[in-house]
Image (cartoon, helix red, strand yellow):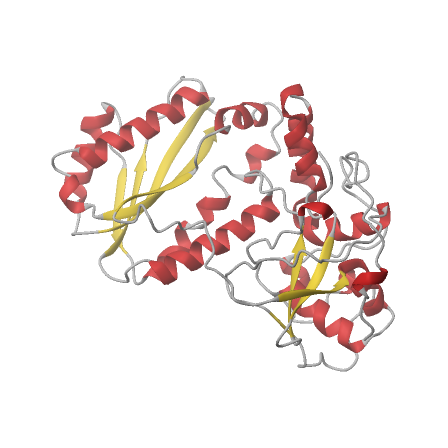
Length: 380
């Protein structure tokens, strides 16, 4: 398959508004190329990804996707090319089609706040440019590089963050004496910022409680927020993965009630290993609120405002320096090979190598984002 010559690639044209980034409609012309579970369950190349079925020859095994949960230093010489409306739409549908309805809802909520216009524009441009990179030493290994917004309400970025946190828990956390603790704060009529303040303050007092401190050596706590329509109240939880001694349920329940004054629902259970625990709790690193709230225009603006500047998960104790949201250094030298829209076009035309690479890109679990150089990022 012919590759793109970096020297021949013209400068990237900026994406200046939401329309060129595929928002707010998020329904570009042509087939979807998103990697939805329904598309990938069969193991075949999704017809939506390239406009054709993968019923021909089986994919070549000559190329593989980089599957290590690491990031790389993207080459500064990554070539640029015109970021046309069409190529931006193709790249963004590939990245975002699995949540296009919720994405439009988040965009509308961001647009409603005039103070968030920079954040809105970064959100709108997420994934508008994408290149396939190859390992300089092993061209069969490929991965995507794209401009990611890193917004906590971007589900594409959150999915990558979740996989990174889960992988880091599995590899960096000692695989012994692990337990899961869930603490539920009683619903109240307090506004959401006050609810979150109370949750974090109660958690700090719980960890310092005389009957608790000796049980928790270190861990990570994740926030989960739900909403009761019947009571019209927020319902917050903390999911805590920790290492330490066996924590009796009665002790945890009494201490949680003591620090909150009104909450006593707790759950404590052992876990098999760090990998299983990481897969369970890391979902909260990407989904502090349920999808149903995203689709509630009466609730979403309050959530955006309340979570501004707040962490949704944090390590503590002996885990404080584990940096679960940071990837390990990647020794691989990744070099630009071909733009994603061109790869898709070649796959549509029947190029077997393009089909094989695209299949692997679609079916590979999301990786931590490998960012494009600043020169290729759409301007704010």
